Image 1 (cartoon, rainbow, N blue to C red):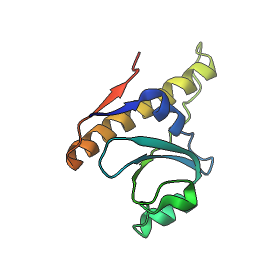
Image 2 (cartoon, rainbow, N blue to C red):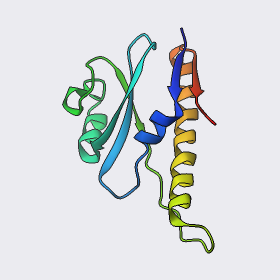
Image 3 (tube, rainbow, N blue to C red):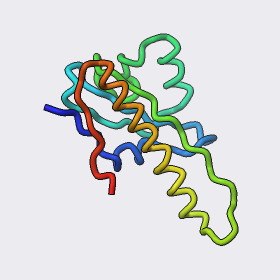
Image 4 (cartoon, rainbow, N blue to C red):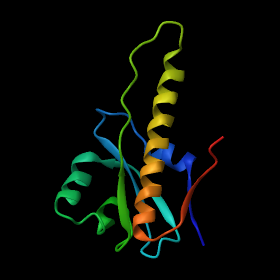
Length: 121
């Protein structure tokens, strides 16, 4: 069975830079299921990563033994003439979520799992 990452979940886990929050995607050890943790305190997530304890993410609301990946935050876009700010922010968030999705696919392949991105319309 394939691991199917929903783009809507990745967008939900992709948060703006500078807010002190981050999103995480957790995958169960066999690579059959995943879940999203967002928002997570950035300092707590980085502390667990530095200690190599991100797979023990119970303090963040995660499942012990699951493998967690950080979803990089998106940079707020510069103001553009003629483009409403909400559209620019949405586009920046979706672009970062897609980049994260591609990174997740590469990571899943390195783990020996088959994975895909869904609902990319």
